[in-house]
Amino acid sequence: MLAKIDWVGWILLVARMVVIFAGLLVVVMLVIWMERKVVADMQMRPGPNRAGPAGILVTLADGAKLFFKEGIMPITADRAVYLVAPVAALVPAFLAFAVIPFGTGVRLFGHRIPFQGTDLNIGILWILAMASLAVYGVVLAGWSSGSNYPLLGSIRATAQMISYEVGMGLALVAVMLYSGTLTLSRIVALQGRHFGVSWLTWLPKWNLFLQFPAFLIYMTAALAETNRPPFDLPEAETELVAGHHTEYSGIKFAMFYLAEYLHMVTVSSVGVTLFLGGWRGPMFHVVPWLWPSVWFAVKLVAVVYAMIWIRATLPRFRYDRLMSFGWKALIPIGLLWILVTAAAIQLPKVYGNWKAAYVTFLATILVLLLFAPALVGKPRSAEPEGPPAPPVPVPAIPAKPEVEP
Amino acid sequence: MAESFYQSYGVVVALLIGGFGLVAVAFTAARLIAPRRQTAEKLMTYECGIDPVGEGWSQSQIRYYIYAFLFVIFDVESVFLFPWANIFVRLGYQAVVEMAIFVFVLALGLLYAYKKKVLQWV
Image 1 (cartoon, rainbow over the protein chains, first blue to last red):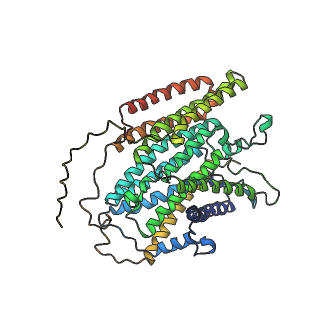
Image 2: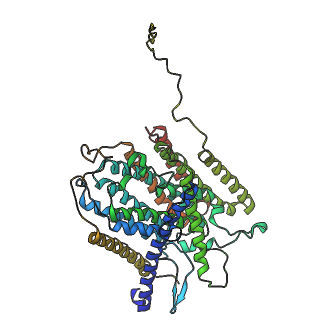
Image 3: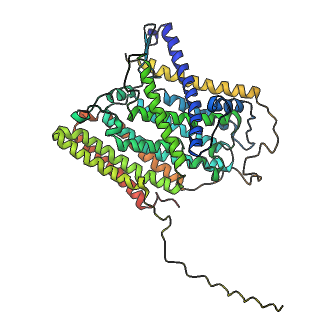
C-alpha cells in the first residue's frame, strides 16, 4: 500500500520517472541524429555536420528553433481538438515505454531500483493498448485541421494502423503463449535459458529463434504502426504534403515529430525485449549493474539501424498492396502461427519430445514458406493484362505538299 | 520484490502527469517566446499554394469503414486469445483444439470477406 513507501522511496520514484523522461528525450534526440546520419551515409552525402561534433546536436538545435517559431492554427480548425491532438500523440508514446525493462537495476539507500518504469503484470497488453491510443493523435490531428490533405492522410493512417495492429497483436499472442506470461521482466528472464541440445548450449534461448515467424510479423507490423517507410503512406509527401500534421507548426509540430520517433524507439525496445533477449548478454565484473543496460542499448541500436536501413532501401508501398499484405498475409499467417505454437507446446505431452520437435520444425518451415512469396516478392503486373486494345483509327496524315523552290 | 498494485500503477500515473506536464511546459514556453503575427493568408489551410476550395471535411471512400469493421472483429478475437494464452499451459491439448475451432470460424469470416472482394482496394 501507499503508506509503506517512506520518503526515500518517494524521492527514488520521482527520480526514476525523471530519468525515464530525460533518458527517452536524449535517446530520441540521438536516434533522429542517427537516422539522418545513416541515411546521409547511404546516399553518399555528409548529412548534418554543423551543430556539435559530427552534427550530434542537430536535433537539439532543431527543437530549440521550433520553440521560436510561430504556431499557426488555421481558421477552419476545431480549436479544442486541434490542441489535444499533439498531446494525444505524445503521451501514449511515453507511457508505452514505462513497462520496458532496460537493465537489471541497482541498490541505492537500501532500496532496490529496477531499471524499468513499472513491472505491470499485463505488460504486453499495456504495450498494445498504448499502441492503439497512438491512433488517436493521428485521427484527431487530421480531422481537426479542417483541411483536405490532413484529413486524407489521417484516414489512410488510421486504416493502416488498425490493420497492422491486428497482425502485431497476433504476433504478441504467440510470444505470450510461448512464455506463458504477460509480464515483460518474466519474459526476459525466460530468455536467459539455453538450448538443451548439446551442440546448441552456447546459444541463448531468445524468442527470436523459436518464434521467428512471430518476429517477422512483429517487425513488419511495427514498421507500419510507426508509419515508417516502406509503410509511410500516411505522410507520403508526394501525395499528401505531410499527412496529418500538415497544418501544425512550431512546437505542436515538434510534438508530433517527437512522438513519431518515440514510437520508433518504443517498438524497437519491445522487439528487443520480446525477441532479442532484452537486456541479457555477457556480464563482466566491472560495474556489473551497467552491462545489462549496455546490451539493451546495443540491441536497440541494431534494431533502429535495421529500420533506418529499410527506409533507405525500399520504396513506398502502394496503398492497395499495403492493405492486402496486412489482411491477406500477416493476419492469416499470424493466426496459423498461434496454432502452431500452441500445438508445439502441447504436443510433447502427448508424444515424445523428439517427435514433437520434428512436427514443430516442419510446421515452422511451412509457415515460413507461406511468408516467402511476400518477402521475395514475385513481380506481378498490377492490372491483369487483357487482350491488346484494338488500334484506334487514326486519320491519315496528309502528305506534305511539295513546295516548289 | 514484486511491487504492490498501487506502486506499479502509481508509476503509470506519475508518467501520465509527467507527460502532460512536459507538454504543458513546452506549450507555455512556446507561447511566451514565439512571435504571433497572424494574417488572413497564414490562417488559410494549406493546399499547395492555391486558395482552398470548399470545406476541409470532405467525404471519403466507404472502404475505410469496412476495414474498421473488420478490425473490430479481429481485435476482439485477439482479446479472446489473450486470456486463453495466459492459462494455456494448464489446459492441455484440448485447449489447442478448441482454439483451433474458434480461429477456424474467424478465418472463415476473413475468407468470406476475401471472397466478397472487400479486401480488394479499388
